[in-house]
Image 1 (tube, rainbow, N blue to C red):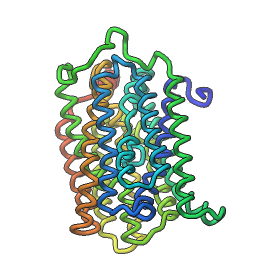
Image 2: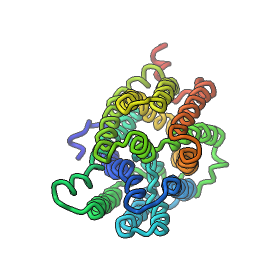
Image 3: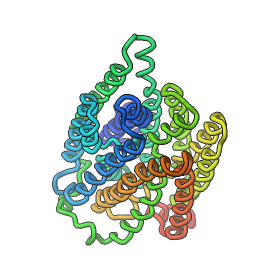
Image 4: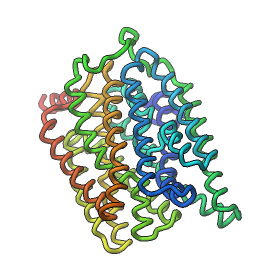
Amino acid sequence: MTALLPAWITRDAALIIAARALHTFSQGLLAVMLGVYLVEQIGIAVFLVGLFFGLGFASTAAFSFLSTFVSERVGRRKLMVVYSLITLAGSVGLAATSNPAALVVFAFVGSFNGAAGNVGPTQSLEQASIAGVVAPARRTELFALYRVVASTAGALGALAAGLPVALESFAGVSEPASFRIVLWGLVGLRLVIALLFTLLSEQVEAERERREWINPVRLPSSGRIFTLTGLFSLDQLAGAIIVRGLLALWFNERFGLDLASLGVLFFIAQIVGVASLWVAGKLANRIGLINTMSLAHLPSGLLLLAVAFSPWAWLAVTFLLVRALFDQIDVPARDSYIMSVVQPHERVAMGSIHIVGRSISGTIGPTLSTGVLAAIALSAPLVGSALVKVTYTLSLYFMFRNVKAPQEMRAAERREG
């Protein structure tokens, strides 16, 4: 596997990236397909779809909260395997039943949040592990590669959301059966993810003297951890209000786009986002991590407003694709920043609390969005999301523009010297 990658990428990093790719492929597919499946095949009301996705975020929050305290004591590898097996059980439930009450339970077990793979139970463990198996100077590049591969897989997953339509058209499979076939295929992917995590080495674990129970409130960087978590939770709220599963549903309700069209649309949007990720590492090295995060979000919020007020499908699609150029530039910079401004033994706590905060916002966002969508106006969630995103961007910049990551300070010293 590593023979195909640059020499500075370790075997452990390659395994984690491969597992993340499979995760985002499955999540990318579900993000486009699941909302339509729940409404059209199961008969769940739109408002309850938001609750379904919200429970998926709540699940991620619960797993991440547990990781904060026990990961360094129990072991990162063990937790990644256990979490993967739990979500595998949720995938089996999703494929095996049509009972709405049971599906709500499996939404929590499987962490089905309607997002395109950006969050999940193992993400904080993956980030902490990756940060420890690469030189600091390469950290942002590795996180960029991690996100590029994941986003590409998510794009292919979005495209694969049209598989039920293809099975009906070319194989003569009934509509309910076509969805079941795809869902059982995702069960197989979840099993492979768990197997990949079993292959990780001891290098992904914390230093032996740091393998203890963690109280995040008592960590040296606790103030920074919780402040950043609050800000990133605001960003996640903006994203969760228009989580991809709901955005796909919005295009379906507003313009009548079918699953095949939605799959192509979100595939293209994801590929455009991947192109921007390649720029992220170089841009962060040139203008700084905080500046990169801020630069990406302002145009993203404004373009979302343009999508909301577009009277024609082609115009809304155009604005969405232009927005995709900016929507992910901040992600590798954020990953690198939160793993760099804390001490190595604090990384899982930073990543976990960060994901807990984002997941709580994610729990609120879809339910809030579908409630507003049903009660006020179809495009109201998009407007609200854009305004929250702009507020987050300005707050992050003014609060942290002078807090540099160690590698940024060393680079500045070299330039001055």
